[in-house]
Length: 545
Image 1 (cartoon, rainbow, N blue to C red):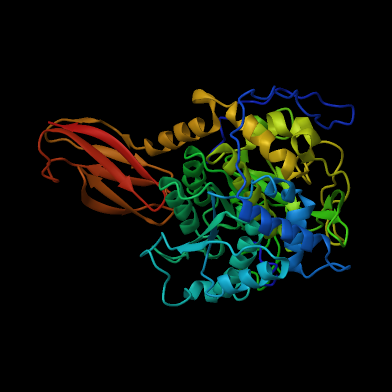
Image 2: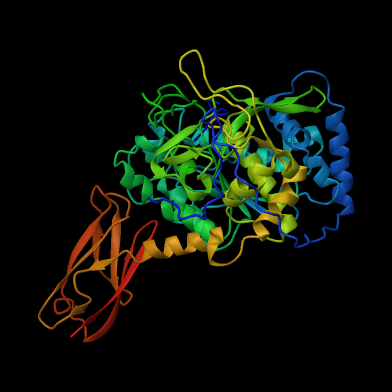
């Protein structure tokens, strides 16, 4: 999680983008862009009252007093003016009819009050905010979990309250008439895990699955910078959370995740403050590394005191960037990323308040695209890498060529012309990006569309149970084994819908069980077996004789 306000396994089988040339510098140049779809976009009929309110807000922002405004008002300034969202608003594209979910580790009872104060200052309407608690017992625990309290300011319940405020304000800055769904998923609903799972709990991925299953949002934003290598059970604990991102992608819901606020390093989850204790070596964040999400890094917009965009801006010095240690390079990065691993970020947005601001800002852009599309635009990385990024400014992707995330304490990554490690494809002009993005994703069809591939990958995980024999003769047994579960978490074994045992996954996320039909008093015939856990249910069939 990235808390600047409070302190402030799977390798995707994605369609390859056209291969890029490698320039003499060794840097990959952009691949040849695919032609856009000729399908006409739906016509948006502006709501006159919305246009009146938003036009007045734009005028007020344009007449802002000189000097840099306070952070929360600056969020409005950069979102509305710096990304040309105002041009979309006055044409009726303001997020109406869409929902953006922000996933949080704790609730904030002051959320509506704080948001109203910011909106009132710039003349924007208050958002419709709904809060749900889909994990655990479906409600907020009476007290902050002890393991969260032990983390102090970083990762605590009070820090999550500040995070929720920043997330909602940032989404609202871009999509002022989008509904905002605050999805609260505290840790320890099953057991107390390691420090990383207090800051970035697997319950948040369970909540993402809930949003996907019930189609509750058109875009999702998660602000977290917990490093891949900070989980005590390593890769098994990270990849056990893949079903969350896969479920969203399969449902066609795009997910944006912040890349972190400590440069090429990541904050340790038991740090007493944001970036107070850091990883010893370069490391990337966990959830933004999934090939199925869009990793959003940070930039510093070049905006005048009056809100006029002067240029693309520069790299935010503390933005997280680099290559995953766990996930392989997805095919959409072929010919663009030279290494063998997934590289982040994919795009950047304003990070004056951290990349926790950047990710929900971009989710707001995706809400505007959903309004134009008539529904969520799905995972966008294929379109970003094969069409939008190579087309550049013509499709609303603005190259960032200055700055780096280097500091006096560490050497980081510099921006340069074209795709680079520091900024991905750069930043955006929402007025141009939104129609171009909708056109590009509408050209993706059939089994090779990103959502279809995600659904296939998730189905494969759900059928990961192995039986030594699926036809069990009378008087014999069969050994069951399965993997991909959260290490040391419970797994409910059911046969024909009835629980027969509760297993515990080992430190690698594996379970095993000797299946004895006679001991279980199973009748002869076919049976359905399931292994139900927090994040995935794996299934198989067998017969007994």
